[in-house]
Image (cartoon, rainbow, N blue to C red; front, side, top):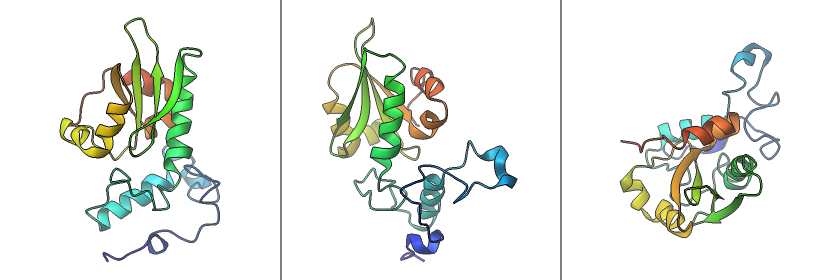
Length: 173
């Protein structure tokens, strides 16, 4: 079971690059229409992979070679950052930071700059994880400003809500 590849987890797909979360060619069906806003093939595959492989880090280790992660930074995280930046046009800029080239939004505010870092929903953001190389290098490169975290699951579905809630989001225990 440890050597199980993505072909064994997911059916053959011809639209990996066309579908960022869910579509009628993959997991959306008429019968599950009430859940369409929650469906995400990337998270489904990642969840299954984490069940089979305890060392799976959802890209936090720098390994973005899995189908669910190959274009996550460019396609999902960057799109979320672009959406957040549009909430304050003219005072926000999307940039990349750290060894993982994670998208973040540097936004001007009356209290000084605020850095909104886009995170994968499976990543922990406690102090121990932030001190590690991958997140630590991104945080250090963002420069001065308050640090806020936004996970891409919330941001793709409710960008305004994710942005507002980031101010009160506690660290993971």
